[in-house]
Amino acid sequence: MNLSVLTAERSIFEGPIQSVQVPGVLGQFQVLNNHAAIVSALEAGPVTIVKDNGENVQFNIEQGFIEVLNNEASLLVQGVVE
Image (tube, rainbow, N blue to C red; front, top):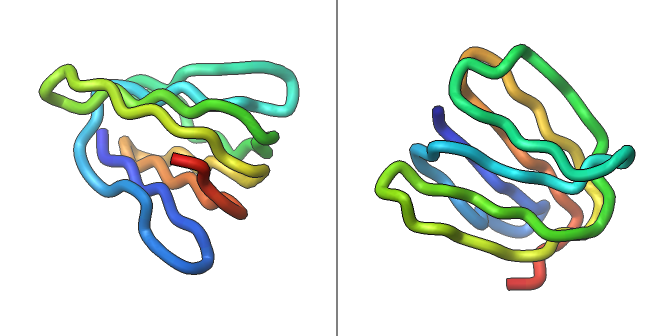
């Protein structure tokens, strides 16, 4: 699965991943390969990305949205605290 994490100013992350865990408005949830199509609002909180090589990347986001479709995930967020 491929992931893009974008703010209005810049790209934060682009590349293949095993999974991503995000702070949904109803709680944390994880997206894995072949996840059903979804669009969800996100609140401020931690994001954990497991890259294809197994390395973890973590940062906190301000509110935003996630869209998943055909193994392509996009996080569109207002800001990131790395």
